[in-house]
Image (cartoon, rainbow, N blue to C red; front, side, top):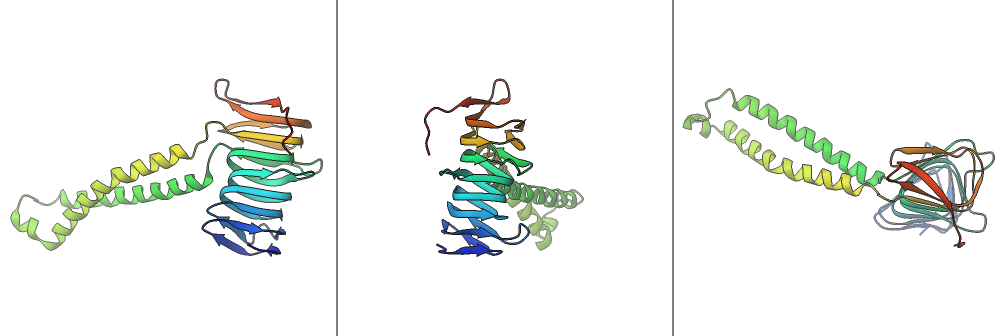
Length: 238
């Protein structure tokens, strides 16, 4: 828990981070990362990554956000500018502003899980390359010859090849599981007050640019038509 302001600093936590006042800095300096939820009063020019929910009390300007869900709901709460990458749900009072210019909002994929999957993919590629090199060396030897088999270096190559062969299917399964879990089938944006022109929405690789002000609206992904659709919201949740 930080009672005051975090400015141009790196802050990491395995679980939860609470910054009661806010984050202020330069977009190229500092980052806030938590495996669980992050709660802030406000953020300006911040880099934030939350494995759980990011909760914003007042405002968020020109920040790079990655989170499972984002909630910025209050009387005049606003997210404007920057780049938002949200796995499933974005619930805001105001999104964008009249003078904020372009803003990117991406939903449907988990950057955290995709990053983990990419690391596994790198390991798969490295093991595959190593196995190919080992097999290339072994193919030039008469492995059936007991003398060659008993050679310590050859024995080491054979053992490594067997280890890699056992590990590769496990890594491939881990990669596929992470990629499957990294996709949200039903991303949603709820705007309690206003979404402004200049906001670019993207859900599961389908884009929609907001060209005029829209109030009290919910955006979802329609799988059949492969488009981002909207409908008015009835019950105010603020």
